Structures are given as C-alpha cells and as structure tokens.
Image (tube, rainbow, N blue to C red; front, side, top):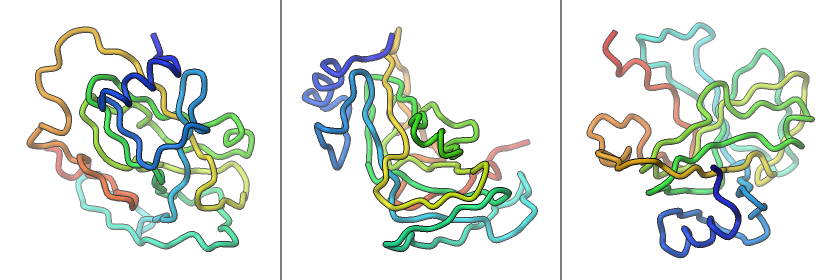
Length: 178
C-alpha cells in the first residue's frame, strides 16, 4: 500500500514525515516531487575500489545549466531535506526525467524508517542532456510498515548515511567488513 496525498499530509502534520522546503504544489496524488540540488560530484579516480574510500570532487551547477554525458557517473543531491519516522520512503525518477534518458539511482531507491537527510542521487544518462538546479528530478512515495521497528536508521551506531548534508555523499562501502 502506498500513502495517498491526504495520508502524506496527515503524516506531515504529525511530523512523522518532514520535507524542507515543502510546497503543496509538489504533492501529487500519491507522491511528493523532489528537485535537483545545486551540487554535483564525480569520483576523483577512474577506477573505483570497493575496499577503498573513493573520494569525490564537488562542483556547483551553473545558472545556465550543466551538460551530463554518458559513461560519466555523477552524484547529485535533492534540494529537499527529508525525515521519515514511521514509513519506508522510496525515491523514484519522474517519467519526464526518464524520458530525457536520466536515471537518478543505480540501485538505492529505498530509504529506511528513520532516514534523515538530503537524498544522494546516483545519476547516469543515455545521451548528453542539459540539467538545471531546482529542476524536478524525482518523487518520493511512502509505504506503511507492518510491525514494530526495533532500531530506526537514525538511531543505528553504524548508519553510514544518516544526516546527509545538502551535498552528494560518496559510497561508504569501504566501511563494511568483507
């Protein structure tokens, strides 16, 4: 079951869902539209290593836009800071974004109950496409949870992505033991 617009509004009122900045125009019948923040990042090295801390370079999207190219992996960020305390949030691309050949996440579309922060976007494109800060980039949908949550994401001691800032965050795979 996905929360409807009226249920999302109820949860915002109860503060179990927080969206900042919030605009009523962005609320769809069962989703909330999120926008591309002003920061993008790319990895500094061409070859990434899952056991190593792969660092990134940040750059700001200019007012007149920025062209994304295939075969370059970009990290972006949502303009919106969100908190989800009683539901499972999913971030999906908008159909208009997909029709431009823009994928906004490689595998990480699901958040956890207790996630608090801006969403890092894993952006790739099928052909060159010009993007702009504050453009609609995706939509959040919310699923109810069945059962009691023992430890919310923001309460985990080893939560690698809790409290994400308004800039993209690189992979923290290197913190895992394997």
